[in-house]
Image: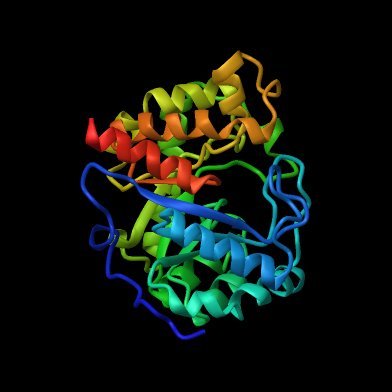
Length: 285
């Protein structure tokens, strides 16, 4: 892949005041929670990328390892095998938007950056792979550090907090300090509070209600990923499993509108078109 857009020097170079960027999701996995096995061929990937671009994505986040609760770890070889079809996709070279690699493995992150990606999005905040922080620094990529505990296999046993807002802020501060000490430029860091990762729906709701406070306390741009998650069903009905995945997009888009009003910088979503229209309505009003 020829990089069609250079890696920005900072998130400030990319972000837009008062309007969040839309990060469209491309899962090249057989087992992701809402769209597993949908994009496991090169043709399907190219069609998905083209759709995400035309619907209004500013970023495309590509993942080859499901991190849903209970998911097993995928080794680097399998992860890279799944990603090869994306690296080779013709339409990737023709678009000027940013590409993000959603991975916990430094080898995968490095190869993605070598293939023209711009962002490393690590759900473990460089905690899982001891070489990830140095890879982030050496690659000069933009990075997203997400709060989580344990691994996807163990995180639902680690959901207890004294105060979820305080605890998540403190634990993210620790991860930020570690990657900065490894050489990552603070201007390239974005944080994600990790809705659904070692969180109950109730604690996720507390984070959503307090996200503007958390952003101010941490002092970094914020991405939020709530699309189609159990928190959406919980907010719709009080039951985190009552609403099927395919019926959560409208509420996910409305939640993106709320997060925009709270100063969130990037919303990570499945249905880009619906989200873009909802955010456009917000600006027009």
